[in-house]
Length: 245
Image 1 (cartoon, one colour):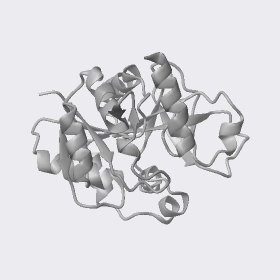
Image 2 (cartoon, rainbow, N blue to C red; image 1 turned 60 degrees about the vertical axis):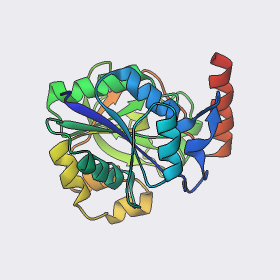
Image 3 (tube, rainbow, N blue to C red; image 1 turned 45 degrees about the horizontal axis):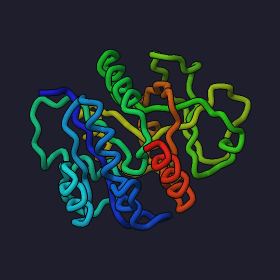
Image 4 (cartoon, rainbow, N blue to C red; image 1 turned 90 degrees about the vertical axis):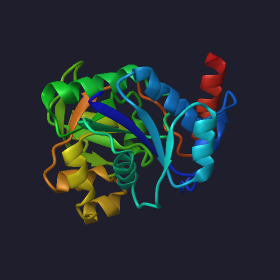
């Protein structure tokens, strides 16, 4: 059995754009585009974890696999419930792929998975170069500061993650991409930790890991996909993807 399983948390009641997983681009729901990208990696089984029957129906209708979960405060809690329900023996890593990034590059996902295995890392994520200064002040875009400069095929520890109040004196600032890889044992440890004040105040789940001394390693992504957080994001991505097709 493959060492890695990809689980995609998704829910209809997203705070900023309700119903976004089922919004269609090229007549295919956003969540199904993400499933398609995940399958292209061929690194393991791909499953959507959701509390919504409508999402299960859409995913299965388009040839994907989905599992119904309880309601959860966080996506990580959701993927862990799904992983437990699936009862997959032999899996060593769980990859949490966000359901609102239909333009993510499968090669970046593959690279993250390879670096996790090669370095025997507990937790990892992706980040890309910041090409516009406006990103630094955009609270919808999460930034990560790393200990050293990110380069192709290195894996550098994250110092902190920010939405706002970014300390500009640091040169190793990158655009964080919402994908996480966990060792199964670390995922179980993570979801049993209480949410921290830092995490709640900044609306950044990964700060729970840093607050509990779980190192998050960061790999450089070659592309910087736009996540669908707002109606404007959706229209921009729809235009790009439908033009490409």
